[in-house]
Length: 115
Image (cartoon, rainbow, N blue to C red):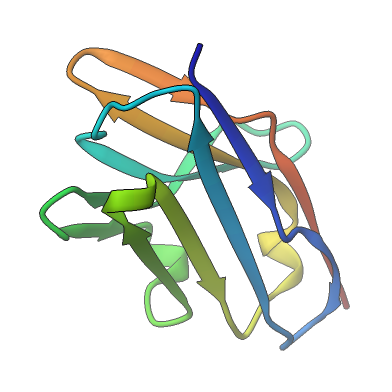
């Protein structure tokens, strides 16, 4: 049973920083990609950042230059460094891992940016 456990969410003021981490357990799979999505109230879940096992990255335009995704393949762990946070970044952030045609999701961690 694959489990993804997120940590690092919380409340921060505009312009502040947070670091999210996600670790996978219950598997020896080497995920093809790992990343972060977010969902704000009343909105659809959207991609924030994704990183492949080869290190290629993809970011949402809204976070480019502010967020950095990194990955430890051997540990099946992915992190998201978030800087210059804005109130629009407020959402539940979900970790996602992809292996072949299967997607795995974490439970989510709340990030709230106060103005």
